Amino acid sequence: MEKRVHNFNPGPAALPLPVLKEIKKDFLSFRGSGMSITEISHRSALFDEVLNNAVNRTKRLLDLDDSYHVLFIQGGASMQFCMIPMNLALPDRPVNYINTGTWSTKAIKEAQIQGKDVRVIATSEEKDFSYLPYDYTVDKQASYLHFTSNNTIKGTQWQQFPDREGVPLISDMSSDFMSRPFDVKPFGLIYAGAQKNLGPSGIAMVIIREDMLERVPDNMPTMLKYTTFKDNRSLFNTPPTFAIYVIDLVLKWLEETIGGLKKMESINREKASLIYEVIDNSKIYQGIAEVKSRSMMNLTFRLRDEELEGRFLAEATENGLIGLKGHRSVGGCRASLYNAITMESVKSLIEFMREFEEKL
Ligand SMILES: *Cc1c(COP(=O)(O)O)cnc(C)c1O
Image (cartoon, rainbow, N blue to C red; front, top):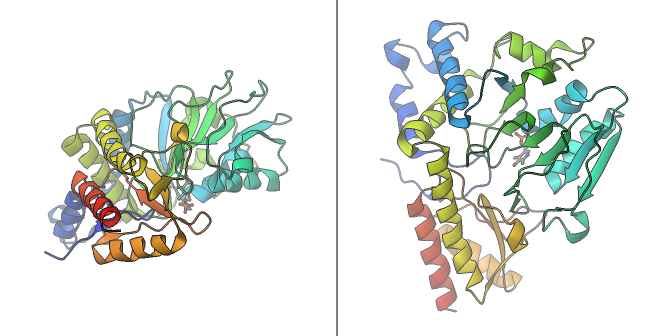
C-alpha cells in the first residue's frame, strides 16, 4: 500500500480512502465488462446506471421531492456564476447578492457583465470578509437572492441561511455541500463545484427547482441553458463520465458507510470543535474569522508572527500534514476539514499543534 499523508488541501481535496480503493480495484474492468469506466459510452447501460445512482443518492441524501432536478454541468462552480443570471434573472427585476468573499465577488461580477440590475444588499468587505453580515433587507421584487454558504478562503459559514422574504434562494455550496442536512424548500437552485466535498474537479452538481426552469430564455446558446441539461438528463453531449462515477461512489460512501448527512454533520462538528478548542486555548494560534461566523469546513488561523508561521507550516509538512497554508489573499493557515478528512487526521493535526506550541 502506498504511503498516504494527512491531506488538508482546500480543493481539489481529499477523497474517502475506501472510494479511492474501489476506483483502483475496478479501473481496468468496470463491473466485469473488460473495459475501464473511462472507456465506455456515456450512452451505455453501464454508465446510465452510474448516472441514475448518483442522481437518486443525491435525492435521498437531501430528501428532494420530484420538483427538484439534479444536473451535472461542466465548467465547475465558476460556470454557474455566469449561467445563473443568464438563465434566472427575470426581465426588469433586480437580482440580490450577499457579498461574503472572493467567490461571492466573482459571482456578482458575472451578473454585472451581463448588465443585470445587481443589488448587493449586504457585504462584509469593509472588515476583510472576516464575518457574515446578518443585517440586510431583501428586495421583494428580486429574481433571486444569491449567497455563498461557506466561504472557503476566509473560513466563514452560514449556520442559518439568510432570510429571503419569499424570494428564491440560490447558493454556492461548493465547499460545504453534503456536509450537513438542510431544508431545500427555500432554494430555487443550489450548486457545488465537485472538487471540495464530492469528487474530481471540472464539474458542478446543480440542483434546480422545476419552476425556475420556466425562466430560461429561448434565445440562448444551447450548452448554457439549464433546460438542455434537464431535458437530456445531463447527457446532451458527453459529460465528464469519470467525475460522475467518482461522485456516485462518494455519495454511496456517504449513504452506506457514514449513514447519511445527520451523521456526517455530527462528525464534522466534532472534528472542527476539537481544532477550534486548540486554537481558542492557545497563546500562539489565533482564529481569523469572527467566532459567530466561523466555518466547520475551512478553519482559518494565524500564528503570533510570520516567521513562526513559516516554521509551523514547514514542520507540519515534514510530519505528513499537508495543505495547511492559507489562501494567498489571506495568508496564515487553513485546515480544510471536508467530509473525507478522518478523525485520525484531525487528531494528528491537534497533536502536532499542541507539541509545536509546547516546545516553543
Ligand atoms: C472552489 C470554489 C469555487 C470555484 O470552483 P471551480 O470549480 O474552480 O469553479 C467557487 N465557490 C466556492 C465557494 C469554492 O469553494
